[in-house]
Length: 201
Image (cartoon, rainbow, N blue to C red; front, top):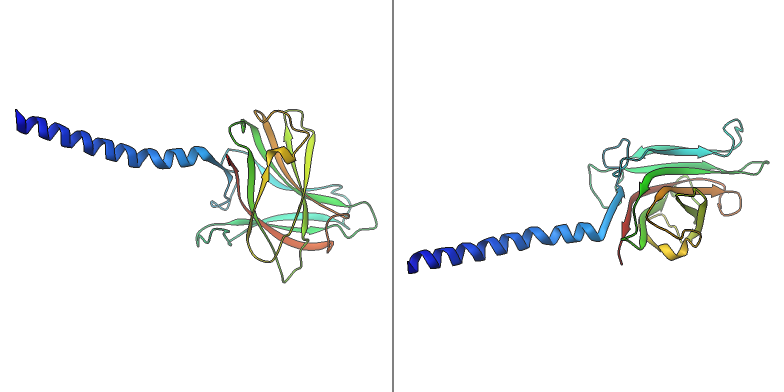
């Protein structure tokens, strides 16, 4: 009987330790939601949403934005991808364009920070400033001007409170990057985007 009791105790400790080791990464995953890591080199994003580039006026050939997949991962994964955004807002007409990504009414209420990695292409030139927009169920954009982009990968973290027009984060429909003839300097260039996440900080 003593041997059986000891065996049960040892098994109980083993189960506890194994269960503990399994539980830790689950908690870590709950603290950060990967919205898009682009590592498949294809659509959709990690939450099932479509994405692509957009133009103010597709018929105006003096401006535009083109999205492509780039085998350059922000976290150094040799098999991973990011997306490249080649933009042009150098036009005699009012110019703006960029990138959109659907979030399909995602409930982000348990998080408080938007994160992503950005770098500029030094060979093609790049803007140091971007307009970032989030849209909730109303589909009205709430904007934040991001600055400090360099030719190296950097992680940018924007608290939800900076998107002042969004009152309820339970239904988030879209993430948008905007290049425009006011904030983008130079007006023609290329930036890379990767690892879009929501986190609880």
